Image: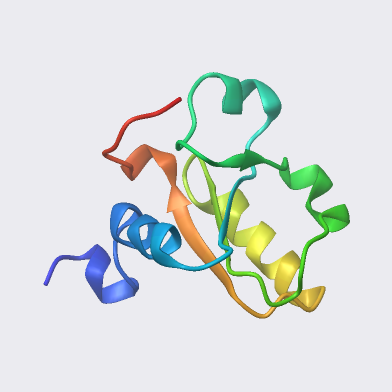
Length: 101
């Protein structure tokens, strides 16, 4: 078992779960400029400063990430406080090993 596995799995492993979940949304909470510099394929950009106005079904599986994991942790807390019931913090794209768009 790797270090990251002890804390719920790696970015890539959680991303596999996102891809397998029905109606899941992958949300990049970095700035628009950071998003344009490269993001996970299929991710949508909702910067952290706009996450409090994000709207979708409260039951939709949401997977959030940022550069290092700090902003996505904040975003997950905001979303959960707003009543979203299935929020996963993927962490930071720095640990992602797949292709980017």
